[in-house]
Image (cartoon, rainbow, N blue to C red; front, side):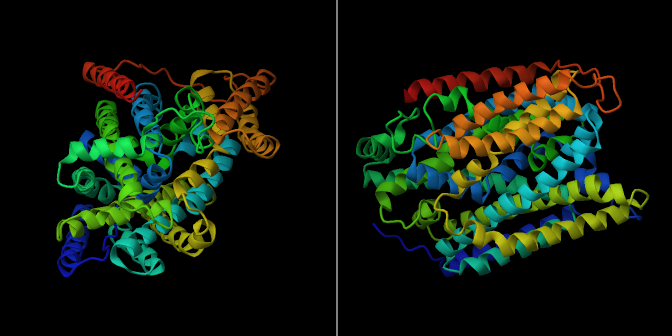
Length: 524
């Protein structure tokens, strides 16, 4: 079955109106009543005044960009529903981050993750990790979002991928460079609403098409009957995609490390929670985002699985979601496509804002410590612009040869995330962790990962992440035992934090846990 994927005149008109409206809304939100202009807290942390609903919506909008929607849908096309484990386990991870880790960050009043590492360890650890995150955000995250976004525009609208990437970069600059995090966070509310309902509608249309006039339940029965392997949640060792999702290790192994690194210690994600009015608003936003994560497999994975039957001749799995958008009615397709593009741009804006925050506050500020607040904001804007230009140049050479960008991103970041999680977890919960122990974990993560990659090529990357995490944990412990205690100058003692949370957050955590148990029980 072939679908026409170009936009009609009505769809194009809806798209243009949406883009123009979003730009106007972003500029209106970005208006600054201060005569002296925005300071660093205004620009990088939205004046620390975000309510819970803006935090939750912005967390999801930053997450479900091109690499998530297009990449995970492509993995659904290739792997099946098992890829949904990333989403459902992320919901539990968000609750744990909100309860145990977020209070520490907010109590220390930080702008960036490297800033916390300086408070906990020393300048060496901060600088090493700041440079690492800048490199990853520019050469992995930004490039992936631009590349997949360009692919989506080419598939749906028939515009060359390069022009699509340039449009995304310019759009991102136009609506976020002036307003900073505040503009990104509040416009995310509209985008998440459209994406969620648009995604659910697309899943409905896909199942209805599979049902051939008999309804969505008939469509679901058909898809589970014709490709039952795509609904295996726990893959067996003889499964062709076992290397990507290695059985029970998905539930008890390295995926936990990947999730904590992404949701707990990732600047462009956690920055929204750092901008909360207070800890209660931050935790409510985290819980809201966790509930939205439960819907993501239905929104992004199911259309990819449906494409296996409806679009069996795709040249690449990552074309699954854009090609399925042809099912949308005229006009609605333009609106959903506009929301998809806007979400891609939102992630670009989130990443560039985080890049500018880390570069300005952790690198530039060290060399120019006595400049005005407005000077640092200008430098942040310049850093955001330069990072986008670099990503545009290197996107195609880095990602053009990969069929599944989502798996590529996970594989690459898996080399470093074990060390990152060790550094933060040990620093938060063991006072004797030293700076040398943290650096040993950071270096060991890359070294051990490379050794296992080449010495044990049959080991699934997720199992490798788990093994490297345990190795780095032991290395950090042993090195720290030989070093200074937490009372030394290079190892700042963590402030006394109360981990008590309000009743509503605990109820939300219990509800999410029960829902996830029911989901996994249903699949098994």
